[in-house]
Length: 456
Ligand code: NAP
Ligand code: MG
Image (cartoon, rainbow, N blue to C red; front, side, top):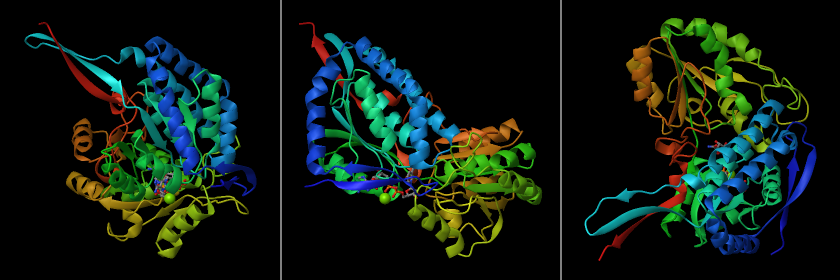
């Protein structure tokens, strides 16, 4: 079957960046076969040598940080500041997990009649399916711990954003990883991604993307009892109490939702404000929203770029214009070519409104009041999702109660931080299954093997 071609557009200008050949099932199977073949070589390396190669890979990423960042600005419309952070995150994740091969420590368990030990065995080939919103970090959160644990990896970037992943695949080879250990396969989700699910040699699939596709992968994985990690959507709450530093809460709220033009599964797209300070919060929020610098993403001080595609623009617009939602105020966005959409604050009529319930994945935030802690908890948890969220209060007891009560995998008190490579990340409810990053990520890429040695 001949390959099809994808035209990569710059979302800020709609100019053609490059064309990329999309591979079919045969080439996918060939890459998986190479990953199987080289598996024993990779897991047979001395742990320190595997660690050293991952550190070299991290160093290669650091040496090409500016190139990778520029590539992401052109391909995904990320601001240059964000894109540099993202490339740096790949380096950091590789460095963090480069220490893991020498620390895959099992247990020695007291038993009668012999010695019992456990081994953390690699799974084999791991397939990673990456979305277009954070092409570099999400790729690395899968491949770095997978490789560290001794697995080989095939990775499918999103059709819309293949460029940095392709470059990372080249850098891995330059750094000395044996060919076939880490292969990037650009192609369609329904072809390459689906093949990861059906191919028996792929022993685990890591998927980040929409809940609908994640559910499909989970169903497909059942056939072979294939391991999966799912990082899916979100509709996270930013809960602002009257006793908080209201100025800081309002000033930072736009950055908790409009970063990456709202195309972030952790976006705090539902702001809940205690009724007694609701009006004052909106007064403070307006200049903060209008101060977000939505300009050409390569500009040094750009804070928000365009949406990823015309489709995404149409999808986001349909939530606001299509539903005649009550817009409180908006920020600005460039006119002319590019998939620009201004930061937008809307006031839903109730928690039943589509804009309050569904993931928009664009720079649109809804604001609703709440009365007390119980009401805030009920409203925050009234969603199928549970990925992240923020709690703004100066009352320590309340911060503790709220952070235990909100059903989400990643909460932040008096800030909007979500992701650190050294701490676990993932969702409750329909936001996903399993955790990435942090000290325990290796266990998601290994099987525990228990062996009893008889002393007879
Ligand atoms: P998506 O379809 O879930 O895409 C995510 C990845 O899965 C892409 O690499 C995609 O490939 C692949 N894929 C698609 N269908 C597949 C299948 N049947 N089997 C295996 N892999 C498959 O997400 P989207 O269509 O790009 O975005 C739609 C919405 O999903 C967004 O508006 C947003 O609400 C949500 N989303 C969430 C996240 C997140 O971080 N949680 C990320 C992205 C999107 P292709 O590129 O070829 O489609
Ligand atoms: Mg899709």
